[in-house]
Amino acid sequence: MRYYMAIDSNPLASLPLALFGVGSESAYVDLLQDKLTVRAGNLFNETFSLSELGQGERFSWPWFYGLGVRTDFQGLVGAVTSTQGVVAIPLLQEKTLFIPLLGPLGLQVPCKKLVFSLKDPNTFLANFNQGRPEVNAGPKNLVIE
Image 1 (cartoon, rainbow, N blue to C red):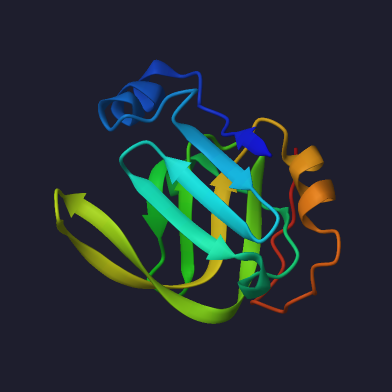
Image 2: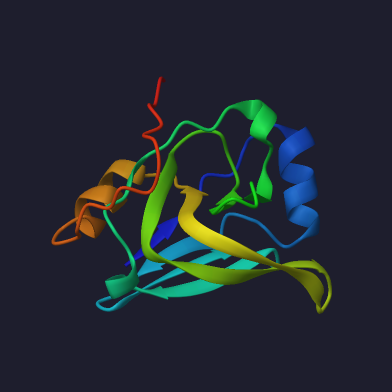
């Protein structure tokens, strides 16, 4: 099932995302029987086996964290297109992801927790979390909305 990402309505945020092909039809999460694909235009396109992932949860994303592909170089990697509807999913084992910077040039970063924004995070989490194990991937981040 496809879940579309929430795109920030502020032109100062959405215009730079659009320059990298991130739009309402090109930013989504596909939840299939055995895998999860996260795509944000040309900025981010990763596929994970569901057996690699723990339970997802809502995640607070303050405006000053920014939008786009984000990492803290400590294990958090995100394709965040809005500060609303943010979901975090821990990985059962750390995985190295490639973050493109300019064409084929980019960075390899560790990923312990995957973060992204969705239009309908509650429906996604209800479907995704069925049968998923709980994983302690660091401190909980409370959502205040």
